[in-house]
Picture 1 (spheres, rainbow, N blue to C red):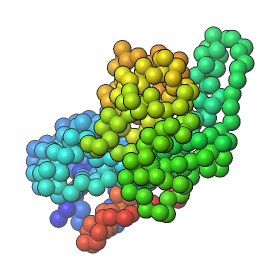
Picture 2 (picture 1 turned 90 degrees about the vertical axis):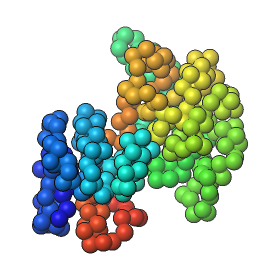
Picture 3 (picture 1 turned 60 degrees about the horizontal axis):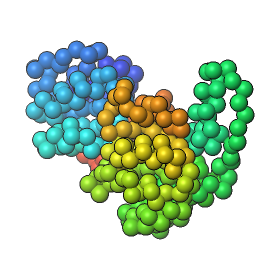
Picture 4 (picture 1 turned 135 degrees about the horizontal axis):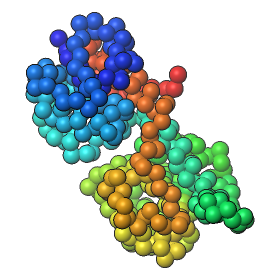
Length: 319
């Protein structure tokens, strides 16, 4: 008999669907931030790391998963599974699956928000409003903006889809060009070309040994003067000291940053006070719809798991 480990919130909202799929299912719930007993840990065979546990209860939930000796499958609401805790769980022989595609529309909308805000100089206008200063200034339209997207997975593809109606000239970059991308796409050995031609760069690439520190001082120096930089995937892809320097000296025109190498972002980080930077607290994926999509995906995967079907290639559209 399967024993599911999940949050009390998930079970309250969707537990009836799980029992309809598998009436004999047993459940161990993370109630609030309470410790899970050793006896319960030993019974768990399936775990769903749902978005409602992030960030406050994430440590408690995933820590419990690392101590569950009979765990066979862990599904996470996130798109990425490169955090060391997932490696630890995977190394123990557990099948770890993600919610690929579920957060992409929400993250892409955050990217468009950054680009619109930077194009209208919103950080300056917000400061002027807070100080009750009537301060008109120049702005630009996104129509005709040359946008480069590094990483053409689900997130990069969705950014390209949303950017096109604004009239942006989009070029993507990916390791292997498949030929059916939504926009013109180059192989990743043309990164320098992309940086030199783009007026805005969006980082949507996963963290790998090849992408770690990819955006260093040399990369920023290749970007066009006044260009914008957006990162919504992984903080470790960026040399943050180099980014701060190039924003401070005016080479880059501004940035929208949702992810950082250290989170929460330390109080003494210079990023907080840069006048041309928009900071969001790794929240681009955290919307009502993205959470619903990730839950819908788990429910479908649970159905497949119980019937012995493949867990791959599941796409959940908004209902």
